[in-house]
Image 1 (cartoon, rainbow, N blue to C red):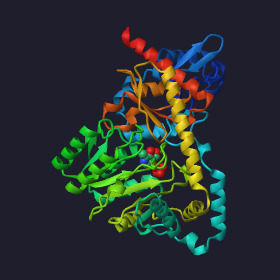
Image 2: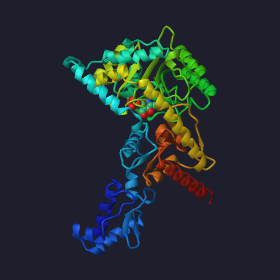
Image 3: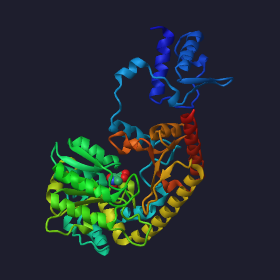
Image 4: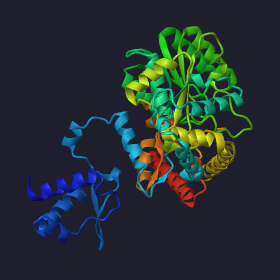
Amino acid sequence: MNRYQQLADLIKQQIQHDTWRAGERMPSIRVISRSHSVSTGTVLQAYQQLEAQGWIVAKPQSGYFVSAKLDRVEDPKQDALCTYPSLNDRLFEFLKSHNQEPFLKLGSAFPEPNLFPLEALNRSLASAGRRAKPESILAHMPPGIEGLRRAIAQRYIQQGLNISHDDIVITSGALEALNLSMQVVTKPGDAVVIEMPTFYGALQCVERLGLKAIPLALHSNQTSALVQLEQAFSQHNVTACWLMSNFHNPTGQSLSDVSKQKIVELARKHQVHLIEDDVYGELYFAQDKPSSLKSFDNGQQEQVLHCCSLSKSLCPGYRLGWVVSKRFHQPIQKLQMMSTLSGSAPIQLGIAHYLQHGSFDNHLRRLRKTLHQRTQHMADMLRRYMPSSVEFTRPQGGYFLWLKLPDGVSGEKLSQQLAEYEITVASGSLFANNSECDGFVRLNTTFAHLAETEQAIKQMGDLLRLALKEATV
Ligand SMILES: Cc1ncc(COP(=O)(O)O)c(C=O)c1O
């Protein structure tokens, strides 16, 4: 291989690894020539090759700049070796992009950090830490610290749900609660129903546990979905069904009470375990908290493993979640002991203190109001700036809007284009294990009050109009 080709390959690899990012200026020909001990002519040839392949662009009087990802031509030999990245790889890249500053994170799954009462939480952590006895800090066995389980159970009781603290296992976020629940009721090869689209954690769990997924769109047309659900339950010997009844991620939609009740009845009839993910249940815009599947689970045999966390409503980074299940209380603890052993004791004590002495309900009231306002504001901006063929959901809680892009427009491509402007959105392909959601994106509405967000939505509208124009020529 010629020296200039070696140099071009080296620079290309650096761009592929994001050492040089789109829009950044490349070192001058003279600098590279000196640092690599080659002639300026060799560097020029390398740069020209990279330019011809779309990796860099020359700007008159300014030098060479890294081009947008979409303009780059991958080496065909390399392409043949690459396989299509698995969901896990794509997710890893997507979640990593959320750590980049100064990106506007409209693709994030978490509310804007300023919405959480971090000072009050810190005070609770410090106060609980001061009072803790050495043995309580060192205690780290499932099911978790009793004071915390009591505080959680009391909240359910105040909301009309008869939950005992003895049936709660504290976990590291809802993700662990959901994974343990799924694992405890299934064995590899079992058929399970998952929603389509669904939270990507469900897709990863199904993959990891070697389960057979039966995808079902539960939210869009609930009447026909219930018929399909019954068919799936009776025809495929389904073991479990993982679903979100309130403010579903990514669509924001909720099941009606009639649907929730019917689903629990069907599950009981066909002996299917329902893994309920209720992480957004507290974030309702209406007067009252919506019901959960668990509230209809009052037969002799428990059907619902109810999973929840404080990640969306109080403190994402604290990783505090739980699962409510009388029937699987012990088996879940045994599984937990084999993986994470237990949640962190100081965090549990601090959160228990906050739930007992802090003003969680006041915080929630403020949070719900803000989320409602910002979601409405985001919807207004979408109406103003999107082409008329873009459709989106009108959730009654949470902070996601699910956008259906104009026919033929890819959410993945749009998200790559927006990344060039330092804006993230979650492309629909992250929420499905087939191509059904490729034409969608999920937007986080909690950043709607920022001036950059209005600019970003305008930019998105412009890109979509351009895509529509290109599609018609
Ligand atoms: C629907 C849904 N379930 C579960 C989780 C995981 O929650 P936690 O952060 O509490 O593990 C998330 C996080 O994004 C989510 O969106």
